[in-house]
Amino acid sequence: MKDYNDTELANIMISKVKDAKIHKILVLPYNTSIYEAAKTIKEHKIPTLLLKDKKDNIYIVTDSDFREKVILNKMSFDDEVGKISNSDLIYINENDFLFNAQLTMTKHSLKRLVVKNDDNQIIGIIDQISLSSFFATNTFWVSNEINNAKSLDELKYISKQFIRIIKQLHAKGVKVNFIAKLINQLNKKLISKIFNILACEELKNNSALIVMGSEGRAEQIIKTDQDNALIISDNCSLKQEDIYAFTKEFTKTLVDFGFPRCKGNIMVSNPYWCRKFSDFKKLIFDWVIGKNSDDFMNLAIFYDSFCVSGDRQLLLDLKTHLLKITTDSQSFYMNFAKVINSFDVPLGFFDGFIVDKKTKEIDIKRGGIFILVQGIRTLSLEHKLYRTNTIKRIQELTKLNIIEKDFSKELQEAFNFLCYLKLQSNLNNMYKKEKITNFINPEKLNSMQKDLLKDSFKIVNKLKKKLEYHYKLNFI
Image 1: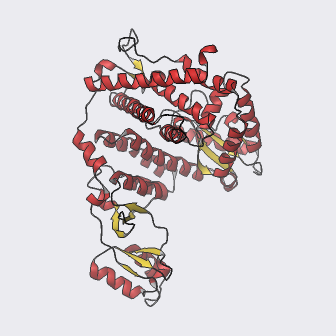
Image 2 (image 1 turned 180 degrees about the vertical axis):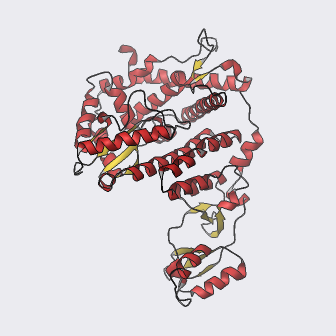
Image 3 (image 1 turned 180 degrees about the horizontal axis):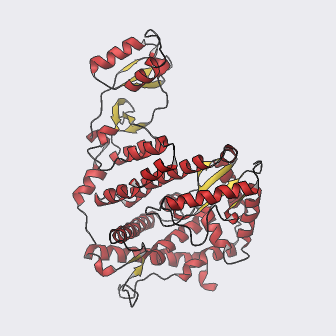
């Protein structure tokens, strides 16, 4: 496998906001006239002004505001400039990483952020152009185009840029968890936009579209399969056949956009995963009771869910219900966690990899990632956490003193490295036009990667043993 240059990592990950070009800023009174404000912009050759009112509230006005609001609305130049300003400012510290600035702009669909120093004083503006020299990919453009798209054809063209973004960020050495965050935000915007184009107003106002599994945990980078559901408000007046007609079209559209069908049929087009709120409450109760082998799997998948469009409160209420009815019974968590005993960490007694005899490969998901994800998910469910992301869950459990600090760092490093190898393998599969799998050949790793993989498997094995003891899994 290709070994990436550490200098690329430094360029992306070590560079801070203050290392980029920060545009100077001027602060004018809120009641300054439009004419004086425009004159100031021209004289100082700056694209942005900040305004302050009598209560010290801060507002922003850009050169585009003058064009789009003043000229088109034929406003008087004597009007106060505050009338065309915006109060929704997003701030970033000058010592924050540039990549976080990029991530924040993408998340909020912004072209600029207000920069503060450690004394909480505004020192300037950083914009998308300032970041262009640090990033080969224009993620803001993609995010903005999703927002502005009017048709499915436009969205489909934009979605094809995702793979290019992933490849270029990975080639530059950007950490896998940052790539996952960024792609997850773009995917959520894309899926939400598709939903809003296809769904009628009644459904948009009375439902919650959720993604689950790795997408819900913000850990899916390469599209593997769909894991989604639709929670419908009990007040929704749509006929069932109309709802199912929409869900079939929605699933078909996602397939067309490169999201493969879920082999387990965990998709909105399956009536099992498309039902009224009250029906979901009953279903969750059945999952907790665990009447059949699929119940705990479905519970785990749903616990990882995240709302991408519609009424988020519907999902939040169901999550609250779920955490309320999951008891403190040892047997419940024992049965929820026991699936990890079905998977073995592929590491022998003498630190040798246990590989498939024919292919000489390791299933890195079954042997490492899944055990860690399920183990942390079980602990999170036991301690009633709402977090879905595995790293965030580890951090929350560490704050609660459930996981020791040193072991927490080891778990995070192991998880990120396993995900890195999985992404590396997936990209190689794509390059060779092979089927995307979770298998890697350890002999194709360099010596450092082999050592890190062995260390990661040891950490996973350590977690597994802790869980076996905590939940008495050897007694099942």
